[in-house]
Length: 239
Image 1: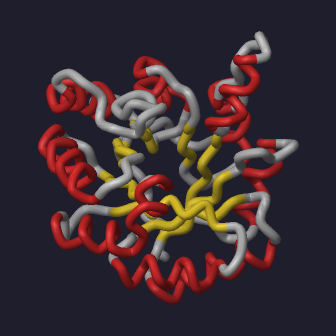
Image 2 (image 1 turned 90 degrees about the vertical axis):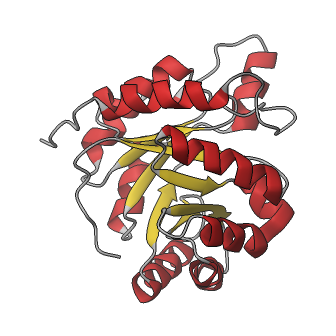
């Protein structure tokens, strides 16, 4: 994978849905609204697998597609399968063994696929991000998980946010960073100001986080406003 510089913020929609038809409908309106990248979210991967990725690739031949595999083992094969199905990016977890990350990176090089390393559940999120870069990942996903957020909130404690350490993660690596996990729309739009130019929209921003169905209301109009707000920003230069 050749690392191309990001010259303007990128908007990615996470299709955290469980059937192909709804994913395709949501993707179509997202592209019309100005979204740059499509993500086959983990629920869609679990429900439809390679068929979902193939369907997205057939419907949107020129659009980058992220397969949110959350790979923990069998890294080369998983990345190869998704690349051949049409994915342009795959996700590997920092809590996987180093050899697994290396295998995904090798597959990324062999099949021209970008590797996104996810630092979710790392004891030291900043160190986890740097470790992923050192192993050859092309991007870092700075991620506070769904269950973690809900569990902490249910216990009456402040829900953690990826914004808590986002500036530190951005400063620690030279590759692009994406922040994921419980962000409000306003916070997601602000991510480029933290130096994280890959803005992801999904549950619970545009998808109902509990039912994993598209949210009610005029999603296309809302997405268009969000895309305009994100694309109007500058990508801060790395120090």
